[in-house]
Length: 140
Image 1 (tube, rainbow, N blue to C red):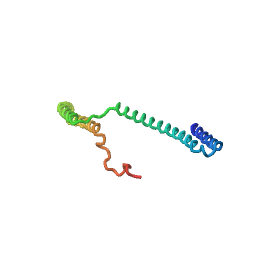
Image 2: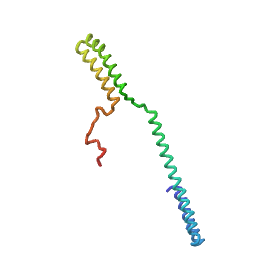
Image 3: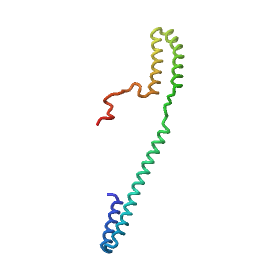
């Protein structure tokens, strides 16, 4: 039991004793006084909860503002593709010239790997499950 609850209980008992001593003519004033104390208690609890929730929202907003955002513009994707193709020519020549077919395959495996990593970075759900009935969002 909370200390404030015991305080409220004491106020209720005091109001009931005062009603017994003063009579029914002061009953409405005593009830109004007790209800005002209950309202103050409720207002205090609500205010604390609202402040706590507001502080939590501010913390979430501050964390989101600090977290790095992935920028996925058309220009960046296009530029990455162009650079990848431009670098593919000398890498293919070097890989094919030094190690012949295995070198050429290794160079292109690296080029494809870098492009796959870039695609997954800019589109997080690219290779994930889609339309699976096992997602569980709508199941009970």
